[in-house]
Image 1: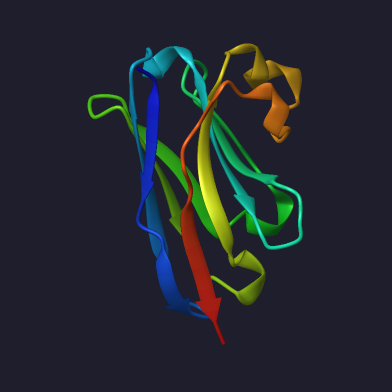
Image 2: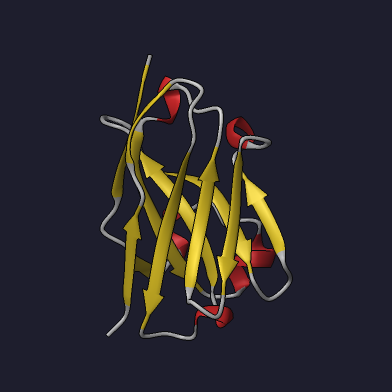
Length: 128
C-alpha cells in the first residue's frame, strides 16, 4: 500500500522556522519526483518545492526561494521541507506528493494533477 505521511506542522511566530517531514512507503522512493504543495483556505493548491532525486535538481516557488529547502534521506524514505523566515502568507495545509520522473524535466512540477500519490497534509500556522 502506498503511503505518504506528513508531520512537523504547527503554530509558529513570524520569522520562525519549522521542518516538515514526509515518510513514504509502498513505492520506490528514489524513482519518483517528490514535491511539497500547500493550500490556504479559499485558495488553490500550489507547488512549493520539488526534488528530483534522479538528477538532484530542486525547484521552488519564487516566494519561498531562499527561505525553504527541500531535501530527502533515501535510506529512511523520508523527504523534508525546512522552512525559515516564515510569514503569515505561508499559513496553509502542507502536502507532500510523489509523481513520475517525467515531472522533473517537464517543467510542470508545480501542477497538482501531475502527481500520483498524496499525503493527508499537515497544518502550518504563522502568527504575527
